[in-house]
Image 1 (spheres, one colour):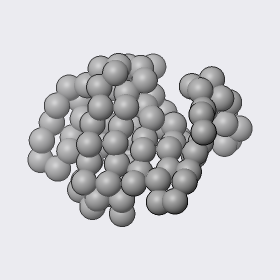
Image 2 (image 1 turned 180 degrees about the horizontal axis):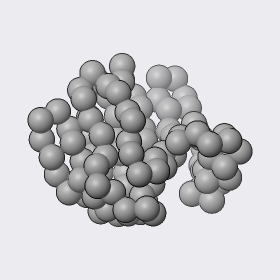
Image 3 (image 1 turned 30 degrees about the vertical axis):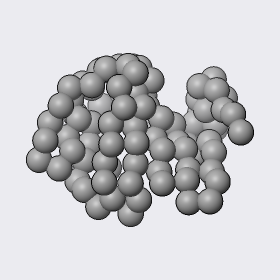
Image 4 (image 1 turned 120 degrees about the horizontal axis):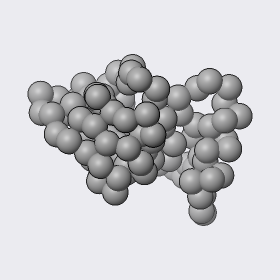
Length: 99
């Protein structure tokens, strides 16, 4: 399986205003592209997840910890933990891998 950023963005554009689009799945694993605008409204998820930052930078809240992020960074969040992106640039987008 393979998906490019271009293909993922096309799928996201077809999602009519959604902030994310699922682009791949196998078993309990799924991959989404996520592109919030100005505010990240996430709530905790039932699966562990990895974020691989595609573009943009900002601050990531993971539980009680805040850290900066930039393109190429990989961020891990345990299932059920409060998390969100804050103070991110307008060009921010990331892969999200749930497992």
